[in-house]
Length: 147
Image (cartoon, rainbow, N blue to C red):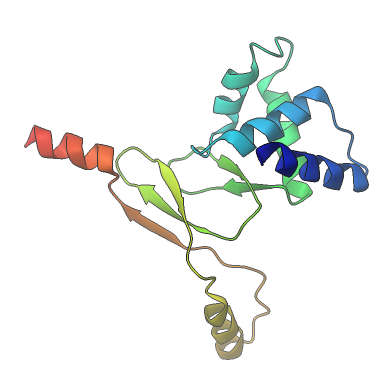
């Protein structure tokens, strides 16, 4: 299943004229397999053994190319580091206020909110994002044991 998704993403990049370097392939593959919404540094650390000559700048450059081609989404909330995910389905995020973990959850898209915002403000809406905050199971457990 994941291999099929990866191949579709690679085909889409090729159609856009993007060269598929081994590093770009590895970054995309790592993101597709990841559930942790990794930072660029996480990706670099995970791949440096396989690509000893790859720099953090190479990872950032590849993420930029993948983002510009609509395959990767940059998440700029939670802690101060941008996190990245493969941009395949519409979903929302819940973020732990203690450890910064970001978890996907699916809910019907709030298109009516965009529509109302356009009507009320006259803006042309391009997109929206919603995040929910709280404490994850692990942090709740730690907190309960320290009181």
